[in-house]
Length: 65
Image (tube, rainbow, N blue to C red; front, top):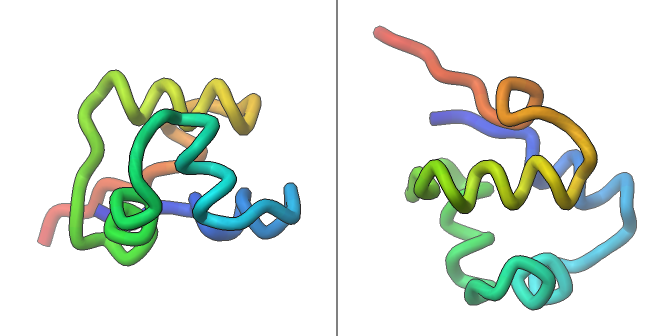
C-alpha cells in the first residue's frame, strides 16, 4: 500500500522519530510504513490521519494489480 506520510511529515518539518513519539510507535514502524513495507493497523492509520489533520483516504493509496 502506498502512502503520503513522508510528504505530510516533511511539510510539518518533523522527523520520523518525532512522529513516532507522538503516535507512540517506534521510528522503525514509521520508516516501514513510509517505505510501504508495513501496512498499519486501522487504529494506527486513523491516529496518523488525526495527527496530520487529514483523512485516511488522503494519506493511503490502495492499488489492486
